[in-house]
Each structure stands twice: as C-alpha cells, then as structure tokens.
Image (spheres, rainbow, N blue to C red):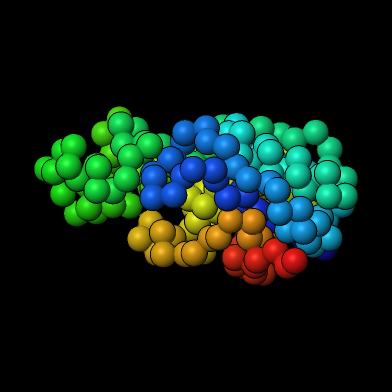
Length: 210
C-alpha cells in the first residue's frame, strides 16, 4: 500500500504594526491574543504530528499558541528555507515608498514580479525553489506521517506551486490568509517511487473557526 504523507500548512498569526508594509523576511511580531482561533486549530490539526516552523518569531509563536490551546506537538523542526520571501532593500517599506526610492528599479521589477528580484532580495521563483528542496527532503524523511508546517503566505503559495506544478505567476495568485490551513497529500506511487510520488490537494485557505 502506498504511503500517504499529509502536509498541514498553517499561516502564522496576524503581524503587529505591519499594515501596508512589505515585511517579508523581517522578524516582526505577531498577535496571538485571539485564543479561540488557536483552539479551533488545535481541534482541526492532527495530534503528535511532525511540527515544522520557519526560523522567524511569528511562526514559532503561532505554533506555541496552538500547542497552548491543547494540541500535543513534539519539538519543532526549524527550517530557515521555509522563511518568507526576502525583499532585500525593500523590506519595511510600502509599495509607494519603493517606487519613490528607485522608480526605474521598481518599474523593472513589476515587468515580471514573480521572477525578478528586489534589490539584494530574492524572487518568488527563488522562494519556490528553496521551499521545494525542504518539502522533498522532509517528505522522504517522514513518509507516511502528518506534518504540520507553520509558515508564511509566500511559503504556502510556493508549496501549492510545487504540488500543482504551477508557474510562479499561477502560484502567486493563490490567496492564503493568516491562521488559515491548507492541506496537501503526497502519495508514494509504485511508478514514481524514488521520484517524489504524486501530490493531491485536499483543501486551500481554510479559515479557523471561532
């Protein structure tokens, strides 16, 4: 029987004072005060799953809030390559501020925003590539398990692009809200054994219920 490895992707809690700002890979705080959302996630997510977070505080804090709401997790695996897209020199700025700071670079970026890199940053295509490498490795290491990954909107879009073999433009079009859950299954198939199996999508952007 083929092993099914189920990925439960959870986007972190809402950030604090991040409205209108591109915070990307910045280590910004999040708000975990709405306990009913975490209680809902604790009921919906599987017990004793493999837990993975990025290296950023907002994912670790969100995972801890889910655990505090009643879900038993082992110690988290921290994967820096599950971090949010790095916007380089533009982090902490609004889109208007980016345009004002360097109109020409801003114009070039928007000619292909999923493949062009911000100054000293990375593209969404880069994010897909590093996310894919971690997914492939952890799926092989934890075959047949449930994996709860508390990550970022960009990372989860990248995971969807990996599973569905999407172009970056298509992956970027997927909406991922804070504290939503998206579920992907990797099915080990006899014909594809050793080549990553096949993916199926179970749910996208499911919102926590109060």
